[in-house]
Length: 296
Length: 296
Image (cartoon, rainbow over all chains, first blue to last red; front, side):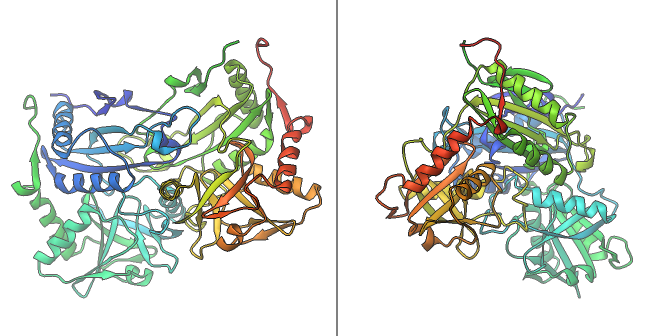
């Protein structure tokens, strides 16, 4: 069976090349939008309920709505993935403010728009490689300006951090807060391990679903998880450190700035968490099966 | 002659209803874009050079480029407006990051995209009315996170401020910094007049072209212009106060929270500045004429 990237736009499933949004939609012109990304692994959505819960909570905070409840949206996403034929996929659902009435600047006059698309699985980092991260000067947009629990497209801080990382020979960036503490990277949360304890940033970051899964798995493995600030020094001098994202799961970080972490290989606790993460995908209570039209 | 809103997309002029951007363009998915808006008044662009200078400077800071130099872009925008037939228009030019190579997350692999559109002139506030503004709790995204001199679509702080303003019976919002000082509103800078002196926020705001024009006109009228922080109290207790934007020019603010400003009418100095602003549109050195195909 051939596979193809697809999108759901204006109530229709279309090839990804035809997936477009109006230039005048405030989802674009004001980045007035929220979204979520779930992944499909071996033909099953992982943690779909959690992604939908966060997505609907974000819409409510932005005073947006779509004409589907969670069950209807689940059915729609299952159909979209089934039709794509993709067994390993990255599935994004988006709500935008829409367009105001002509001449109006009032967001209350907008009709919110829903979009979704499915593309092949995206890896922030190749699964057998460690990431090299530069700690950027760039400050993450603070919670007081944009609530990070609303998953949003305000990424210019992360993009500028990424360019800074490239300039310094790294693969991607960690951005910081006003005190220089580590916040997150472009699309991922950051964890460090020191003396077998797991540390992660508590505030001012996206509450990642993969972050939450890593915390749960670490606790199941008997590790203590500490929530607080992670300093740049602690990050550089970690025993192990990793990134979490729906786009790749749990991914080892093996270099921070000029500091090689451990022996530069994926650390033993990170490997354990990573194995547990992928094993979890086979547990029926976290997996939602996609019923494909014909087997490949 | 009939007029119509038009857009320039993929190298072609199309009706605005067909103006679309790919859902996968990072201009949308990461709000990785910069833009500028110029206006056309009585068939002439106003201050087009300044808008183009800011637009190209923003692109450079974001490491983006378009295949037009300023002269070519001017010709393109003049053609777009001429073809629309609109004598009073709002003209937006946009550069987006574009799409990365399949599977890549590297912005350097993207081919930047250019868009423009022309729609009828937009007024933030009707010219004969004063604005009622609420001072929002919402903090403007700080300079350390996103450089405000790069005109950008990171508006969720402004949008949330706007909803807060509606809840409190106001028309629009002013957002603040971490110290509670006034920054700007959704699409406009803010000025206050106290004892015949003009005050405006120096840092952490968009360097508006209309803001710059208001400063220049005030100085020509013999007013002293003070750059610094504007406190919430100073805003509420101003003798006069106004907003500046390409979408409407110099617009009186006549109520801040529950405080009526002056006698609730457009103040005399604001009126003088406003008159000078519109008179300036007739000066050839600030105006770029659109040559329409046929007179109406």
